[in-house]
Image 1 (cartoon, rainbow, N blue to C red):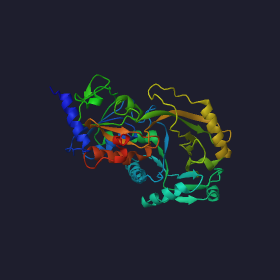
Image 2: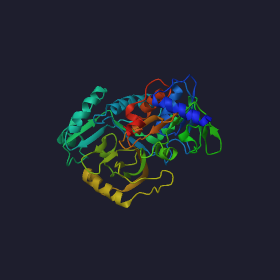
Image 3: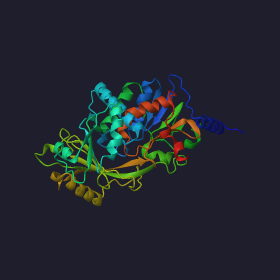
Image 4: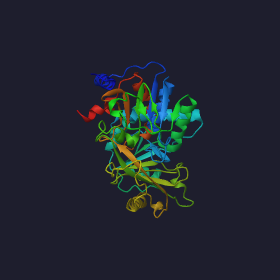
Length: 401
């Protein structure tokens, strides 16, 4: 006997196997689970394309436990030879600017970005793609970089690449702005957690929520960041790992203006190991410094201990004293423990569930996803609605060649 559940699962698997996404009728209902940067922009993009959208999140857009939480994120377009990301950042820059003008809310601080390298091999690959995307990168020798940015010690640097179009985003504020626009433009929101019931079976009875109710929709998009492996333990086994990251804000010296975002760019230091990145200004919070190691320990995003490690703070201080001599001995004024949800190859995951074509998985931000938000949301919305094909670079199939 073929049950309704088995019928849905078998037919969905057949559609997914063909790489198809049926074009949806205007006004179709999509439930988006997760109101972070991926989910929020996807929900807003779906709404703007004529879908009826319900956005669901347990704790709200950009909350403290989310990977989209916190104050600031770097936006830069250099990705080596990865053209898909370069093009998405170029598009994202347009959309960030367009929407902040539309909303009258400042979200993008265009202070530029400086990438430090031991030689020019990275720039030789990256810069042509940036120019093709309409951006204007500059290659700098260590002496040129030192003259331009005297507050940065260029020890060990063989080549620097400056992106004047880059800068940083106000992350938590951006999530809230997208949420407000979503509601103002006709979306609906439910402050609920989802129950991991029937998710691997294609939700034959709908999406069960924490208050005991359920949500029916034509399509479901799960943009739950570090919670995705808990919700889809079979499908995402070994494909997304939440890992612990620490962020520090150090107070800048009195009467020292060189560390404000009007004089200093964001930086990505590929000379040292482990690598560090940072953001100036941060709305007067000080100089933000963080490391981006994918080998950081695994982390539970719901219950994990969010106190920073004295040893890692000390390591950051030593790095800061070397790279920014005037910041030696600067006080730690704020700190935060967050997480990346990293895929094995650090590429995003945007795909249909392998046995349920109406269930979509969107995640694997891997510490670099925030900047792409509006461009990725636009892309995902078009894919879910059947207007464009899935991107093979983001498929689940890539893990099983």
